[in-house]
Amino acid sequence: MGGAQTCMGGLSRSQAREVYPEEQPYLDGEGQMKVGDLVDINQKRGTGSYKDVTPRGLGVVMRFEEVEDLHYKSIGTINLGPIVHVLLNTGVTEGFHPTSLEVIDGSD
Image (tube, rainbow, N blue to C red; front, side, top):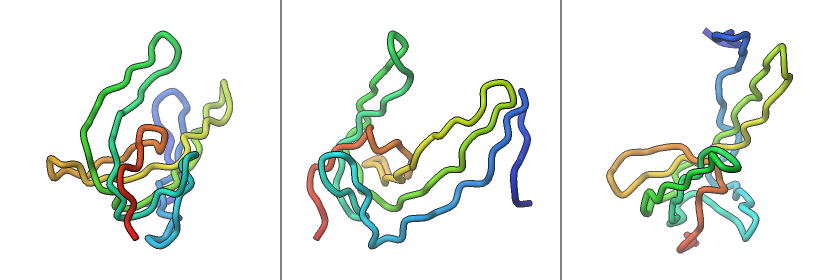
């Protein structure tokens, strides 16, 4: 099952795909984030008065993924940006937007 999928409300999206190889750094605004970096995670959700920040602890960057844009007939295209997959100190791997991560110690 590939290609675009249609969800409730006329939403269509394509399957996420990995576009950054492990050696490819991702620019996070303050420097380069790369696989193996130790990061502090402060998960940001919402915007304006609905913005919420949840501290999630430390983790290690495992891989980078680019997500296809969302398409709504009534409002157009929404770009979700990249996802950084991080191995949390709990042993679970989760995806975060790069703005939720701060590099504590870079891998060399």
